[in-house]
Length: 93
Length: 137
Image (cartoon, each protein chain N blue to C red):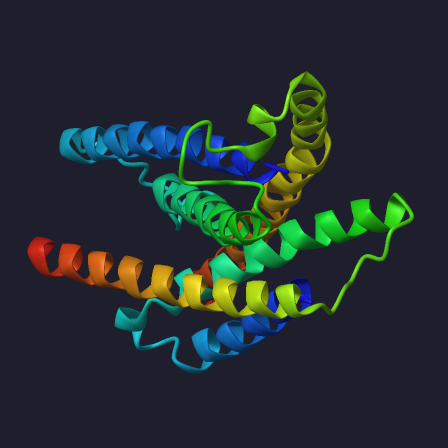
């Protein structure tokens, strides 16, 4: 479930990055790259799980909790990195 | 079990490489030894390209670390990796997973990054050629 959530987040953030590409201060590339990388990593995990003969995608309450926390974690990381990068740009300007 | 550790370790290496490249680029710029003629891929600096790879590796590892934390495979107290305190069999299983799933994850991210860098360089090169064509006429 969290693989699908990360995939949706990567697509949405990628679309937002494209739409707001001129507003560089938003640093939406951080969000897109983070969720894109997580999607790719979970895709590998899904392939290995399927190769072992187990169910690759599960929809348990714990999976929902993980999906929620990973989205929140990704958003927090984006805010933190964007804050740092914007401050660094202000200092060098 | 701890497959994200491989990507996190690689991120540290890429971060170090990025700083070395950045230092070299600064040195070249100060000496005025920057390449004057346009070359394929010279539009975007290598330190920036490596920065994107570092971001992907850290971002992916951080998100996967949250998942592992909620699955109880990682903890905040030593030895941090739950399998490390469960005996040699669990450690062996963990290392096998890191060697297979973890390395494949790293390879997937590096491949995606390399493809992305090639695509961006190609479009920048095409744009440069298109700008040069009317000047030549």
